Length: 301
Image 1 (cartoon, rainbow, N blue to C red):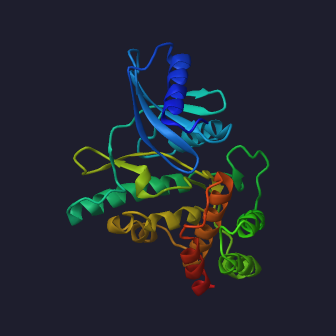
Image 2: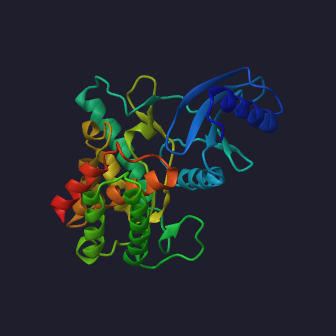
């Protein structure tokens, strides 16, 4: 993927031309993350506008398309329709109007309570999706035990942590906490989940859209690590951004019984997931919050 503004916009023009057989009349940069850049393209044919996501690595577009389509089957909130999976580097999607719930707004307690309830209702619908076994959406062979499955995930992530440690991107103390958590695996993951649930993988308020009046949650975007997993894998994200102001974790707990040591579990999920992200996205972790997350997990171990 090209990195210059001109190079990226040139890619968007090419994608729109291939998918809709017309040229964009306007291109707007919407933002980006670890793995790609997102643009809104306008053009003179239906649907007249579309989101074009350009990925840093090949075939991530196919993976996200599958995640969006799977989540949409169970979602109570709108999710973007996939228009085109373009070659190996771009995904073309429906543009959803809305206000990002991750921003700070002056909302009444009643409105926050209603929005928080809608966000959690949607998450619980994902988690209630039935499935036999744990693993990636297209794994084929699924693991009957979450504990067996996630132990291997942690071992794999520890190797990624070794790479970050060797390059000076994480501190020895952070790596030591990861190693200690793996040693205490059976203590952290004491109880097998009741069953696999569909997890979004990045379910924080930055990926929730409100209506223009900011009275209701209306849409969900940008899954990552969406898979068949322990539903509690999603929970650490509920405390991020403005999640606390909507009371998301508390609302989830009111409707679903959590593991006795869920706080330790979800902090472990957070640390290992973030380490994998920095390694896989090839983003320097030197200035990350990983040391703070590691210290918080160590207090719970």
